[in-house]
Length: 327
Ligand SMILES: Cc1cc2nc3c(=O)[nH]c(=O)nc-3n(C[C@H](O)[C@H](O)[C@H](O)COP(=O)(O)OP(=O)(O)OC[C@H]3O[C@@H](n4cnc5c(N)ncnc54)[C@H](O)[C@@H]3O)c2cc1C
Image 1 (cartoon, rainbow, N blue to C red):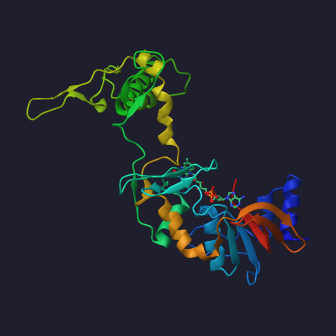
Image 2: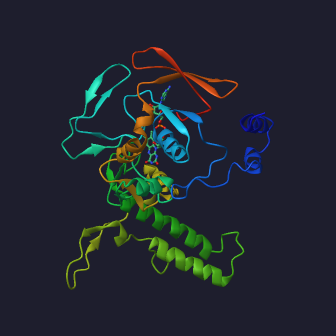
Image 3: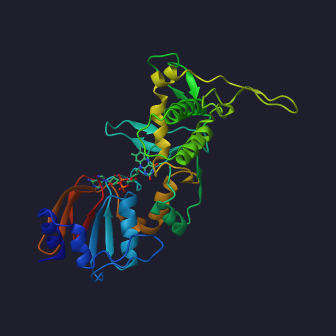
C-alpha cells in the first residue's frame, strides 16, 4: 500500500491525517520560503504534473524543482498568475462570451482585480524577498475616507468620514459601559481598584469627560482648524447615537481588526502580478499554456491527466504525482 493510500484511508476512517503524516515523518518542516524544504522520498526522476499556473502551482513547481522533481504545469489560460493579476494599459482580456476587452488606462495606472494586499505574516513576503520583488506599504485603513449608506435615519444618503463615525461610536459605547460600571450594574467580580482602572481606560478610549460623558472629540476632526496662539479651533459636533445606530456604519469597523487586514500591510511596487511574473521567470519553461485539464485518473504507478491543447485536441500526460490547484 502506498503512503498516499494509507493517509487517504486514515482520513476516510475519521482518523487524524496530521498524526498519521507526522508518524510517517512527512511533515518534517513547516513551509517557509527561507528555509530549504526537506521533502520525503526520492525525488530523482519523479515526475509531477501540476494543474494551474496560479501562485500555488508555480510556487509548488519552484520548490519541487529545487529538490530535484521534474514538474510540468498545465495552465488553461494563455497567461500565468491566475487570480494574481494586474490590469494596466494594453491588458487584453477575452471573456468566456468571447467579448475582447483592452484596458485603456493612462500609462502608470493599474488595477489589481484579485489580490491586492499582503499581511505581515504571509509567506508571500518571504517569496517577494527571495524572488527580488520590491514591496511598498498598502494603505488598508484610511480614517479620512467615507462611509455611505442608503437606507433609514438622518445619516442615510450622506457621506460620513470614517473617523467621525468611529470616534462617536467609540465614545458612546465607552460612555454606556462606564456608566454601567459606575452604577455597579455589571455582574462582574471587580475590585474597587479594577473599577478605577477600567474607568480610566474607558475615559481615554472614548475621550470621555471627567463625569463620563461623550460630548464629542477633536479626534473626529475640526469645523474650524486650530491656529496659532489662542485659536484652539472648533471640533465638529458629534452625531446623535440613534442616527449612528440606524446608519449601520459600526458594522464595518471590524474589517480592519482581523489578522489578515491589520496595518502594516504591503503590496508589490507596480502591481500584484509582479509576484506572478517573478515566479513565471523561474518556472515559465515548465508551463504548458492553453492546456485545459478535463480528467485526472489514478493509475497503478501514479496519475494520468487528460487535457485539451490550444488546438482543442485531447492530450494526456502521465506522472508519479499530481498537484491540483484550481478550486
Ligand atoms: C477578488 C479577490 C481578492 C483577493 N484579495 C487577496 C488579497 O488582498 N491578499 C491575498 O493574499 N489574497 C487575496 N485573494 C486570494 C488570492 O487571490 C488567492 O488565494 C490566490 O491567488 C490563489 O492562487 P491559486 O494558485 O491557488 O489559484 P488561482 O490563482 O485561481 O490559480 C488557478 C489556476 O488554475 C487555472 N485553471 C483553472 N482550471 C483549470 C483547468 N481545468 N485546467 C488547467 N488550468 C486550470 C486557472 O486559469 C489559474 O491560472 C483574493 C482573491 C480574490 C478573488
